[in-house]
Structure formats: C-alpha cells, structure tokens
Image 1: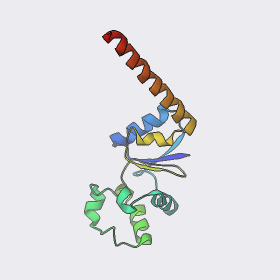
Image 2 (image 1 turned 90 degrees about the vertical axis):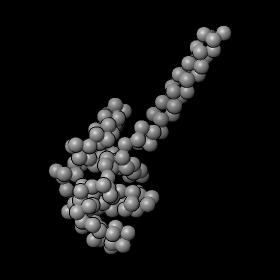
Image 3 (image 1 turned 45 degrees about the vertical axis):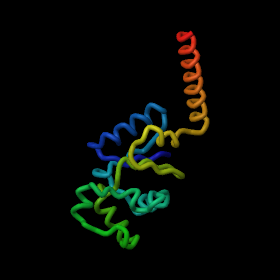
Image 4 (image 1 turned 135 degrees about the vertical axis):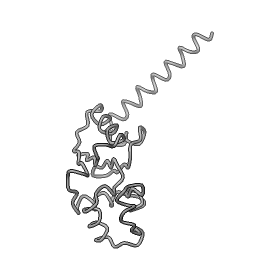
Length: 142
C-alpha cells in the first residue's frame, strides 16, 4: 500500500494525490498536522532514503528554523523523537511503499509507483502516439 504524508495547504501534496487517484492507485494519506507519525514509520522512511535526513528534512520549515539543530550530528533516537514531536520538519509530500520513496511531487518520478505492467502499457501508448504524430507531420510536409 502506498502511503502519502501530507499537509492540507501543500499544493504538491494535492497534485500527488490527484495523480494517484487518476491512476486508480490505492493510498493511505497521513496528514502530518492532524495525525501522529510513529517511530516505525520514521524508520521505514529513513531506510528508503539515499542521503539520510538530508532527503526528508525541510530546511525551509518553520520547525527547522525554530529548532536550530545540526541534523548531521544528532543521534538517531533523538532525531526520531524530534520528528515525532515536530512532524512538519518533514518535506512533503513523502510518498512511500515497501520499496520506494519519493520526496516532493515530480511528474516523471512518481511513475515508479505504477505497477510494471501499467508502466509498460503507458510507454507503448506514448511511443505509438509519438510515432503517429511523426507520420502525420511528414504527410503534411510532403
């Protein structure tokens, strides 16, 4: 199951949810303001990062500015507690499943959450449409 961590005022969160719905992908929304994020969820997210906390902490957030913490030197347990107490430290949307993490909304990257078969079909349709467009342009030029 796909989980998406959001806040209500986030336009990228809205775009991501609309995309998931358009693709008929089931997801669970976790609002970072109204829901609690637990230690296990934070560890799952961190396990999927490539750069650790740098991938998921929003340096522009008010919580980050207020806390003034060096996230490069903080102990893991302390970090988890801080995120539990200040979930808006997290960048958003955070979109996760068992194997993948996407931070923010990106039209191309979000496709990784499509089942392989659906991605293959969409690529085939897009390729055929592009091929047909090329033929049509050549016809009108000649």
